[in-house]
Image 1 (tube, rainbow, N blue to C red):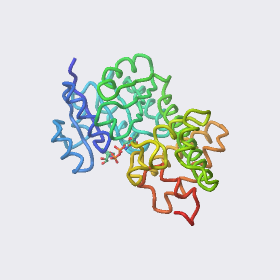
Image 2 (tube, rainbow, N blue to C red; image 1 turned 30 degrees about the vertical axis):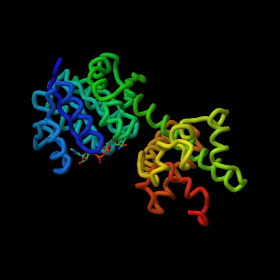
Image 3 (cartoon, rainbow, N blue to C red; image 1 turned 90 degrees about the horizontal axis):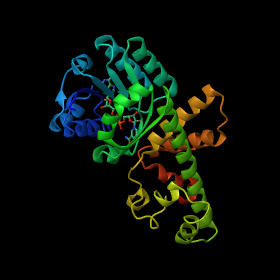
Length: 296
Ligand code: NAD
């Protein structure tokens, strides 16, 4: 059934996600602080308004897709003051687990339903409607959110209570950051040992070194023609966004008392890579740094 949905944050991800809700027949009212984002959204059939409060007026569902936790808290604080009890609030931004739980508490205090539902799949997945959603929140809240999430994504998982979606997201991306560095180190070592990249790929891709960073996102050009290494490391998934997720994982690990030594090292390496001016490159480009300065 078509619903009136408020969408706050119409950037690289939020814009195309909101457009898919319009295509599904929903009436979408959108707000963003950036005029450029509003213009693009307008062309996609999203009803553009001038404030968060105008966007949520009469909306049964509110979706946020914002840069970080503080933006989500700021917007959800305004939203819960304005909407009736029973309104469903979905946040699909990638934020720290503590902020996600704080946002849930804001919603709950006003009798609203909250769902943290971060995504993987990037801007390509947002446009194509093939994102993966990992959601946290009460069973009833997830049940209400699921049909909406399915219009923007292909896979939707209920991972547990408040914050479980964000927890799943940062744990997954910590595996990804660490495994990418591992694959890059193996290629850098293989090169120094005179091993061809293709030979290493052929063996590792069907052996115990097999992983997504190798077989889907191979950091050297050739073996996987669709990987960013073949197009000068144009993202893809920018190194700066990987660093963001690794930082969130380290924050969560510190707060929870979890030992994540390789996660910490991966964060340090991506920070160094970013400081050297490479944050806008695909995260697999870190192989250039790992090969050492002489070959960069
Ligand atoms: P973006 O910077 O393109 O978009 C964020 C938008 O939020 C901007 O247009 C900004 O103007 C708007 N905004 C900020 N504060 C606001 C406020 N108070 N009210 C209204 N609008 C506000 O970022 P993005 O790439 O769309 O990413 C959004 C989120 O999704 C981030 O948390 C990011 O980590 C996550 N994410 C991004 C990707 C990706 O590949 N880009 C993939 C997965 C997850």
